[in-house]
Length: 450
Ligand SMILES: Cc1ncc(COP(=O)(O)O)c(C=O)c1O
Image 1: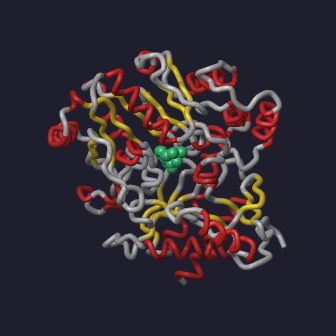
Image 2 (image 1 turned 90 degrees about the vertical axis):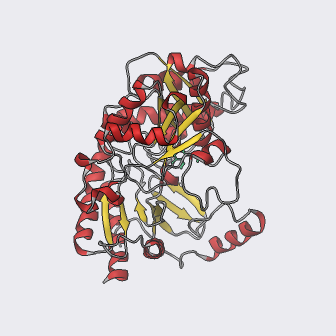
Image 3 (image 1 turned 135 degrees about the horizontal axis):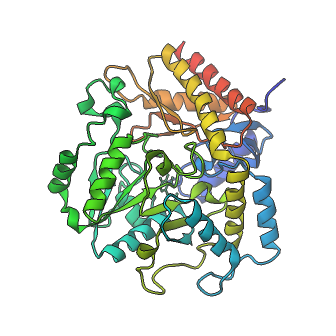
């Protein structure tokens, strides 16, 4: 038998089921179990569950392992750091790996201007801190965010997040001074008429007067500290923003003294075929927040931005006990080296072309695939009941994911309507394995739709 998938039991197997039963008695249901499998080992893009089944991972721990599970450089770097020290607390005692991560991020993020970086533990924490810094620097309080945006689960990040159920329902009150504007979601744009004809070159929301009007109806631009945007939505359905919208918005922000915060937590580190999605747009954000694939599986996030902005808060105003943990910093340095040496962004654009080609072929056969989209290897397809109404087909999406899992492929959905199938396969995955995963998707589609 060729291929890496090996199924020894039904999915989930008895040992996975038993762990999930224990989990249900010990962990609240609010923490979701998106798949019913328990992991024994993971390497590259292959996960072996506790029953000995080998599955292909197209979820990558939700975009965390762009360099693959247990990248050898990351494993080695963490081991070496563990032999030296695991924690001293950066605000108490300085250590080189933290400084080096900051230096590297200052170098590789868009823009030649002087920058500063500080490190925290999670994407949500980075978002919170970016807002803190932007407010301090500008002396303004309002923050503008987007419909369909996702920025995390802490109180302010939750306020900035769009989707109500499950992320916000029952969790109010939310942080004040947050204003939401529509995301340029071409496929579902009412003004574009036939969404299929609307392409990035005809974004109807990029109009300057329209931006003025929109702001004037919700908030005075001169009281806005920052806007925060995912250049391609992650949890919101893998929707890339049209280039002319981003430039119109960036120009508007600049003219009104509003800082542009690019949330590159899911788009970062090669996923879109560039190190950062901002590069596709020629955008130089004032602040860029990163996390997920920054440290190849260890918890680390960063706030990087213009030196004068990041230097605004007073001594002691930023930091935390664990932010920039030495093991996570060692892992990040190995990831950043792999990005360069293994040309991961370039591999991502090739992989993206391959995935997109297969998806487009299926879209030509199946009416249920309403849209295929995404930058680089951040590719998705949106499933609909029919192409005229574009009614989101969440049940079909769930059915496809379940069918794939039963055949040995871990696949994730996303989108406000839960009807988008997204691919976050490690970018180091050999083409044969990517093709094997895509074959599983094709078989699953055929078995459901034919
Ligand atoms: C774009 C974006 N921002 C913020 C976050 C929150 O990151 P974390 O889960 O590490 O807090 C996520 C997580 O999925 C994300 O995709």
